[in-house]
Length: 494
Image (cartoon, rainbow, N blue to C red):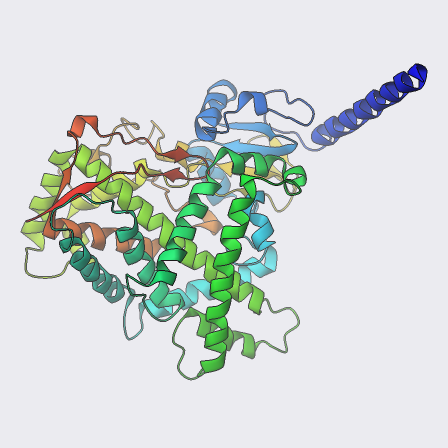
């Protein structure tokens, strides 16, 4: 009996060793990869990573191995790109090779390669081309995107006035107003601020972005083959996004029942019309699944990224009241107090424009970048990246590249101003990424940030509840995204 038990243990050890050796060989058999720390079977380089601070962990490895290195996140092999020149060389100079969407296992099970943000190949090309054209057309329609933003900004001011100068948390004030802009485009109408369904949706979006940035999500992305079978918090994001999908699917059904092909009301209508046009085309990607998930991509990204940047921007301005004061002065000189800010004002407001750029730079909403993959065997800086290799273009390392920003960790609008105080472009300003996968909503987001900041600061001064020197600007959580700190403030009418 004892001999049999020992034999079983011995055989188990032998099988485990063979599996580990096989995995090791699989990890090293292809390509001439960039250098990196030696991985251990199964756990990879987990010992070199802090799942609570992945961006900082990557920067530490960059300091040791250079701007291009290979790391194993569990059994998953990733090539990491750091700094403006490296990321530009990949995403712009070799844009086609690096145009694939990489794995993001924590939400891949919701999307399964459908929807414009997570699609690849011909599906991605069809959906991106259509989405860009449709968003552009809405910008030139009877009610331009600018008019929608201006209208929502005025609704926001009404809500802010109701606070009567008392302390409040701006999180859902800002997410409601920003979400209504993209809602008017994709769903054809805005929501009332007190709509319970709307508030529930915003809480789900907010919670989803938070969950995507937790250590649990990092672990799921490393070990999805195991963790998808286990109970626990790592499953929360799946159910949140499924609920959001259900909401969008119901909106699609309503549009299908009331569609007038001669008068499209929103993005969903335009997609349904395209579906009908291509119903005989066997290679068409215009189907209900792609409609629901592309609409969700636009709704989610159009809500969370801009509202998070606004929340963070308010913190930076309270931390630096001298900057806020200069913005007030420029608003008074260029816009005054009697008319609504307009996009065309930006060219006459270099300091305000520089402040907004600096807010975006330091907010660094998605520091790791959304994963890419190379779509074919790719030569890059003397290395050979095999087809399908996942790539992390660290946008945060570009936005803090000391070659392009004199004091990258410091909030300084001067990073975007020349010696005469004129606005100065900076090639390393890539909060929307770059190349073929650059954010679909960049133009809309830039317009929103300018109009919201100027509208708010035209009417109010920001009052912190603590001295400026005591304001903590560190993110509440840093993972896939940088989650703004939670805070309260008072708004003082000007």
